[in-house]
Length: 408
Image (tube, rainbow, N blue to C red):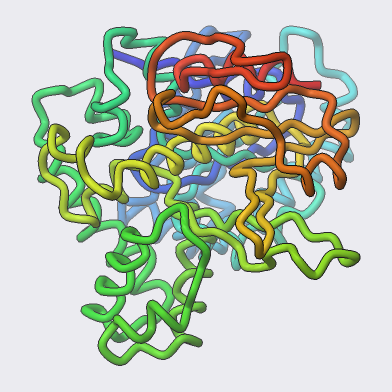
């Protein structure tokens, strides 16, 4: 079973010669590219090569020109962070075709994408790719499945299941898999191999401790000193460095506060969110979805799911929106502010409509600052879309994607 990804249309309609798709391991990059890229002349799929294969990796690094002679484009090249010597050769290959006028002569039927690259280790990707392929590649970011993608393919899936499993495609295409075992293996393999080892981190146990402490603080302001004090000896400077690594690996997201230099009342510390609730829930120790719904962490995990849905939408559709949270030192707050060129949209995360007062309204300081014209949207776990007033709308998270498509 293949679950359709929202980003597929962006990839399919791109006219760039080299595409780079980044994202954590097992989020579905290779499957997406294999289903997207079919040579329109031969009707054959692009040839797929994975550099997890040590022999192919060695050939591409030692003799990249020979590699491209043996494997002519169009190609899907998987885990390219392992073959840094190949990138200058890709640049040379494309530049030669460009000078020969191949791209000016291409017919409407000819495939424009020659190389579709994937990479799971953003640390190595940043180091090896962007400089080599500057001006010759377009970059896309894929994370785990969004709520919209899951419900579009499997409409009977509950939000409880999504909170517990997260968006890992294999857990939905193979429902017999143990969620706990799958995520335990993921933490051991991906975290240790692609983050800890590649970053040269020596304190393996301490890193895992900090990772668990961070998971317990998803949807909270980032307080490095507090985490350091509970970590058993990791300095706040090191905690900050590790958070930066996790952010670059696309496992967490630091949501910036809206800042106005004229107001000293605004909170200036970013909030930390995991980009997959299943990953966060496993790190928190949950092995069953039932007690999770009644736990003290469920509100923060649901807010995390809302944030992840917004981020995934922005990336999947390549929106240039700005995203913030807004909070004053007096306790007034808005969970999410989306700023576009035309308007400001405000969203709140509430697990249940029972926690939403009938007379809810924008905080006075927020109204003074933004003069919002759009109603406040309260994103909830379930229920139905409805208006509480002319200034406030209740929206179940299952309909958040459709709401976001209407933002201008």
